[in-house]
Image 1 (cartoon, rainbow, N blue to C red):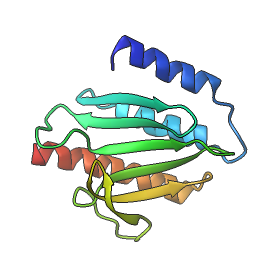
Image 2: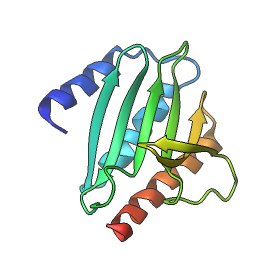
Image 3: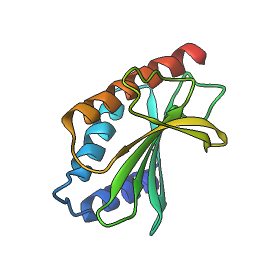
Length: 139
């Protein structure tokens, strides 16, 4: 991230008041998970009043701009939509929603997290790892 983008993300997180749904905690856990891989680049795209997007790309990627997008949906309370290219992950428990053209014009698989659900949070975390590995393989 650039210093300006990093500052925007920090300000966004600092100003986000956690709610009983714990969506800020989910967002932070996914952010930390992605930051744990030195070859993952994060980009923060704020659209105040609509969404705040954290986009993850692997340095090995050449064909696509990202492998995952974590959107914070501006609502009361805020909730998360975590999207992947449909062909980059599996969904063995069928927890995701297919969204035609939903990720930069390509078919996507998205997971909506409206409140802390340990199983779903962990399930989506596993999808983040899977998508990152697939990004390396596809180049």
